[in-house]
Length: 75
Image (cartoon, rainbow, N blue to C red; front, side, top):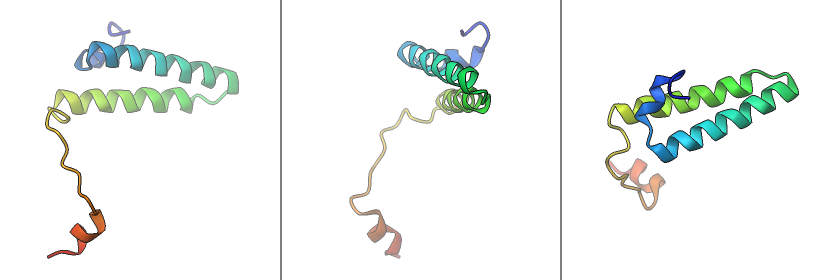
């Protein structure tokens, strides 16, 4: 699929497989239900993920807050 969607090359090989599976499943659902937005939404989500990964997002581990509401209230 990366020959048709070159942005997939920004994904890891495992993510490329997951992307292909998810897009294929969404495409089947779209055709079965006459709702093309299902496939388009899945494809767009994966393209945005690849764009973010290409920009370097996701390389750094995320620091999770223990209690996000407390952190929002603190000055």
